[in-house]
Image (tube, rainbow, N blue to C red; front, top):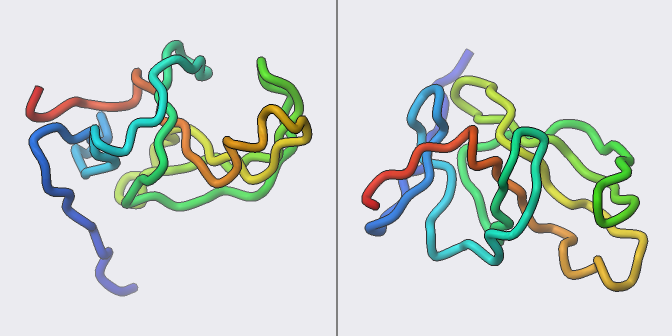
Length: 111
């Protein structure tokens, strides 16, 4: 087994995995704070780091049917949220390729 590559983020406000405190996303990459996750409030990000993707899965979310991948912390394998792979409604297409991180699963550093 090789060494795990962990990317560190620069900037004053960083979101980290609540379990292992590995960097996950920068405040600058937030697109929206108005999302709902499995465990409460969630944020939509354009970029996240130190994750691994689960398999494609069709889910009926509050905004309709989407194909998503669960995202896991690459260090501790804690589920952090999901990635929008495909949106079936035209008004939801902007989410494709974007990431949801659940606020409950994150720590804030530099706030």
